[in-house]
Amino acid sequence: MTVLNNALVALNDAFWTFFVIPLLVILALYFTVRSGFVQVRLLPEMFRVIRSSPGIAPDGGREISSFQAFALSAASRVGTGNIVGVTLAIMLGGPGAVFWMWLMAAVLGAASFVESTLAQLYKVRTSTGFRGGPAYYMLHGLGRRWMGALFAVIITVTFSLVFNSVQSNSITGAVGTTMDAIGGTSGWVLDVAVGLFLVAITAAVIFGGVRRIATVAQALVPLMAILYILLGVAVVILNIEAVPGVFGAIFGHAFGLREVAAGGVGTAILWGMRRGMFSNEAGLGSAPNAGATASVSHPAKQGLVQTLGVYFDTWLVCSVTAFIVLLYGTEFNPDVAPIEVAQTALEGSLGGWSIHALTVILFLLAWTSVLGNYYYGESNLQFLDATPRHMTYFRSAVLVAVFVGSVAPLAVIWTLADISMGVMATVNLLAIAPLSTVAFRLLADYSRQLRNGLDPQFSLAKMPDLRNVTAWGSATGSPPDDHEIEEEEATDPEVGDDGQAPEEEDPGRGDDRGPESKDH
Image (cartoon, rainbow, N blue to C red):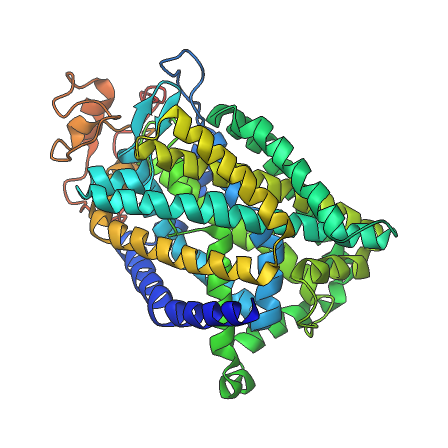
């Protein structure tokens, strides 16, 4: 097993260092500049649109709201990567890894906007709402069904099987540490028991469909994230005098001469970017599957909401872990599991009770990640026209993966997760690069309406040249309503299609005449 893992680690390091990271950085910078720094410029708008109301699905139920789609993607984002992944990055890359994690989140916000906006545009209607994601924009946007099928297979294996094994592995590790702390029974017997319990509660939810998954995610993710953030705030307050030293370590190890000479900066960059992507998933192609489910009035709205998710995940939740760990120390025993390091660090500041609190929080965050990861696989298997019987087989395979992850070695699982994540990111980035011009046109349309004081609306009649768009009306459409007439009269003809704001603000003709949001 050690020889196999070492070979996989060497392959993985080379793949990320010489291909994935350069591709990611180049495209993320291009998206940032081309969109006029949308991830910063429209930050206030992100908080506004997350509150929009959904419509009614064909089966009579409520469609997925913008916030529910945000929670569904956060269920996958906020989990093991925020606690175990960040701790592992610090252990292997030093404090400087945190800086590169922060920086990549800022740059990758534009990539998140592009991929989720495209997912909204090319989504398809179902009886319960909408479904979409990279496989769908590869098919309908690029006309490459083979590429969509390849991505569908990769994301199903990566998230629903491999990543879910990572989540369950971290849960059993955390529970084991808690049992050791109270003198209880640990070891393989406990791992098996926890694994069976995870299988039972996961089965109870995933057989209920996307609405049940979204409802559970909406209830648990914000609550657990807030509790974890409060723990981090308490740690910072109790160690406030050491906070400047933590910032010094983060920036010093990211750029320090000693680290450059020793090759430590490269290690910090590598681990910061890899663990950052595992956590916030920007550019990876996973969050668009959740973003496509939202019922909103303009594709760019959910692109903005999913960008906010990147910031929430990395700048807030991941930073909590970084400060908890770094306020405890910067030198760690490489033989100790990352979850044990995080629990010990929290105990050092708050006492023994915090070990158990972190275990509960990690358990629920990681379990909701299992649910979110499962949905990504379900959505993509439906793209492949899976039958109900095949979906039953798939759900069974997910439950097996959850159990196996509970008892399998950590190192091999993390390495497999990294490799599959890199392949998946590569396929998605190669797809959104040529399609990004469509996302920028949508952003330009959205920005024009905002400047004119309107709540942005979209229909295919505005861009009839777009092909294979089925969820936004027809290319011919119906006669324009008052909203559309007002928008056309108020549009600044000098605004380009790159989505960037003009030098001078156009006051437009916006007033209170805009209609209520029309949900698609």
